[in-house]
Length: 384
Image (tube, rainbow, N blue to C red; front, top):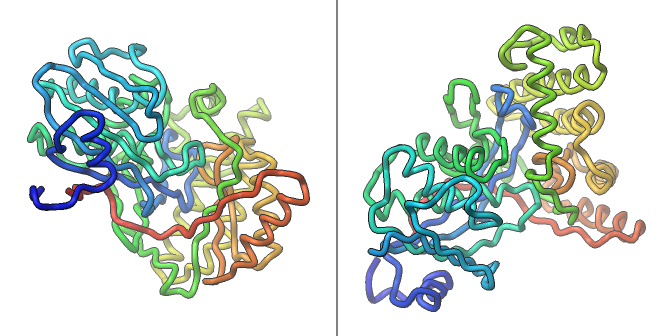
């Protein structure tokens, strides 16, 4: 980074917190998931895309063996931790995500000798289902990889970031969010086979089709660590065991779920099986340049998440209904559930969709939702 360059906000924040200037600046995007919800930890398929919102990390090496982390969004909660003492449960809150990445790197044989200082900034709303936690992990992973000259492949960094979230933070998430953040490509969605790890780019250019993808942040906050996400994962594992397979990915027919005596497990399995089919259908539509045809698939996904997987929430159901009533081609809840955002596919410039949702929220006395245009964007990169 040239010494003549004017420092940006996160670089100035780094200087305020640590003194001097960072050795580099990295940015990792959040993600939206077009289709394929709760299929990742069932070894199925997902189709996310990277956003143009994300987490920026300014970083420098230090010689004291410490990992020092500061966040502009949590200025009163600094974290300074000896790298050698990092262990699951040793760090809580937001700092656990980048600390977990350092721990995962150490566990994989990359001890990060000397330590590092990280200054974090974000324009991603937390709890909105846009994967702010994975963006933080991936930004930290790229920064630590770059600072220490590790040059690890992106898929390996994604796996290490997932390891941090699963085994350091304690959230049993799949690999989708980290893969989308690190491997995303502008104008494309990322088809990820969560069993093999294989990926391929699928064209996703709403503007070229005269359409747009709108994310509606319903304002209802979710937390994947509250136990309900883990409960759904456990239910899927029990359903798979009863069906005699290692994961629900191996079940291709929804009729197979009918053989489960427990009605709850029957519904959970039916969602995963049909959602994997919806990913395949969406890929075929996009490959055939029929983005408009994806609309009904989004609606079917929402109905399945609401009725079979039971992870939707009132604001999401209202937002989907209002969007469809105002001319959207399709809409569904997005993310782990119990709060967060809705994704709607609508004609470009169709402000009536966001306006209708806002009006319906106002009628019910709810906090006005925030809407952003979701543009399929590039994955994580070094920006300074």
